[in-house]
Image (cartoon, rainbow, N blue to C red; front, side, top):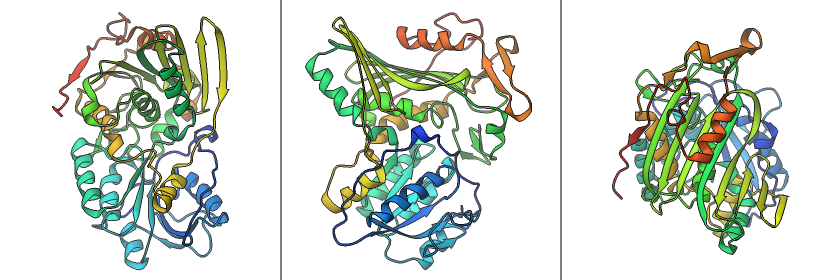
Length: 415
């Protein structure tokens, strides 16, 4: 993607599985369709193309332009939409935009978002917002100066299960909330790390990327746990520790524990890997004094267990693009605002500034599959993740044979 300076940048993130996509919703659009531009049409950009097609059919938007250094596939964009190699060219030729969607690689978010905020358009920026806390501060300043709204693409936060969780906590259904854990175990093969130059990198040519397990593939687990805990801004975090490992030959972490304590004293532990035996739907567990609630956020499914028994319910989900339009048209609150991403950005900054991930010794890693489809499996990782979340412990504190690191405390800035 071309930055305002014209630099060519790589293509965006991987296409999401179907269960990661938001449910459709109705969007009213008083005053006509919103004029929308999409930056990044491959990877996750393909989801936005499908969603914009739906919204355009409903009369809520008009996709007037797209930008990507790699041309879109034939028929992927409406014939009426102009195609540009970068955002700089798009903005020069496309006036009066209402919304700009940025779905590009992590390291391009800051320059592209700042360029978008130099227009009169509101911004939808994919997760993570940017690759450093300093860029987050700059982006926040630019948004306030422009008066524009910024929605961050944490799609799981649109789940209707989240208000249901709030209600059960208020009702005391699971007793007093004592802790929250996020557990994610996915599989990513060798091809995953060869799909782009930035995959698995902490930085490229001096530019932060921070493509680790907690900041990109399983970032929704972290963001969802924080939201349930009521931790939205940097001031909502009291302490933060990381313990980062890697089984793959990469720069970033692929197997990690992030331990957080909120300003209210609630512990949150995120135990995550992309080196599992098989991919399982990630989940956030609420540990109460009288029961538990487990939220499978990619499925919008909530299971509650108490002495009275077990219940399970699936919920709908609000589309974040539709929510941004409703915010513009009717003043609806943003579901995933830039301001409410502060707590997540502290986690990203802790990962970014932590020591290099500790390699897991080959004796504790087995490889399954052949060729580019081969993937690393950390032996016993499933049990390790469960224990870490349940005990709010890091891998080294659990005494795992491959966990030779120790937790790194991140100096949380004073609010």
